[in-house]
Amino acid sequence: MKVLFIGGTGIISSACTDLALQQGIDLHLLTRGQSVRPIPAGAKVITGDISNAESLLKDHSWDAVVNWIIFTPDQIERDLALFRNKTSQYIFISSASAYQTPPSHLPVRESTPLDNPFWEYSRNKIACEERLTRAYREEKFPITIVRPSHTYDKTLLPFDGGYTILHRMLEGQPVCVPGDGTSLWTLTHNTDFAKGFNGLLGHSGAIGENFHITSDEWLTWNQIYDLVAHAASRLTGREVKANEFYVPSSKIAELDPARAPGLLGDKMHSMIFDNSKIKSLVPGFQCTTPFSRGAMEIVSHFLAHPGSVDFCRNELESQLCSLG
Image (tube, rainbow, N blue to C red; front, side, top):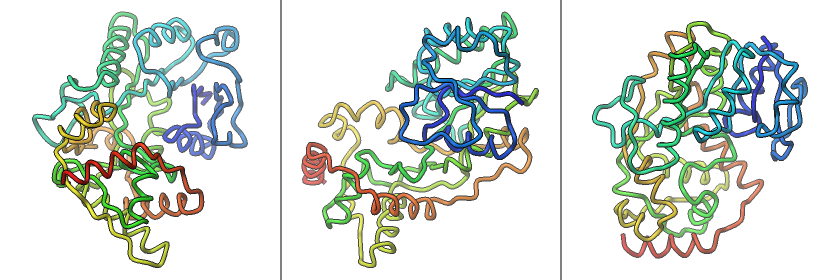
């Protein structure tokens, strides 16, 4: 297959890029060349910006096009103009945060309504899906919609605040956990996501369909914080604890407005997923990296490459913990 990835070097897409090359796919990456991740050998690079890519792409046609970096309906219109009659499949990367929030039923299925009144990012993704669905119905534009949930690699700590929170754990300082830490969450390693996603490339059964691709491992936020602390203990050879302090999500949102959309519109709610649909189309799809192992990868990376402590965030974290 000849496949175009617009992007292809992000947290999620880099794993799909690596796997596609292993699978022998003729993979082209349209990239501005600004990623901190290197482009793997074997990928054919088209250097440029999708906003001005018509001349770069005019002599190509594709078995599949994947746009990893599209967020608004106007960008959808641009891609419709670029790829009409140029691709046999167009895959839009939506978001599981587009699902009904809070969900009325669990587990979430692809039939769950799309409705997120808290987060503009999610509402824009919904609007993109609606425009593409109309394009499929009216002109048979060959869409596939994929909704990742919380997908990570070794560079992404699972909680807001990133390295600052890990640093607090290492220093024995308390960390703020929204609510009581018992809501359920789903974390998916990027290499596991890639197994399901790449199985959709060029698959005629995926045309006109939507899928989420997630792990079947469900963890409470208490477990997630504790697994990161346990990994830090194992890797440093000394006891590291999470020292969780619990604060209502509404109070966190009040004191940290920038965090409010993603917290109230996503992370505060239990989200678990039924992956029957992707498994029915990609036989053998199974996530094999539990977060206990993923946490070891993440902490190992940050111990070798410490981030910078966000002093404003650190001060806010202390203020929040004083409320717990």
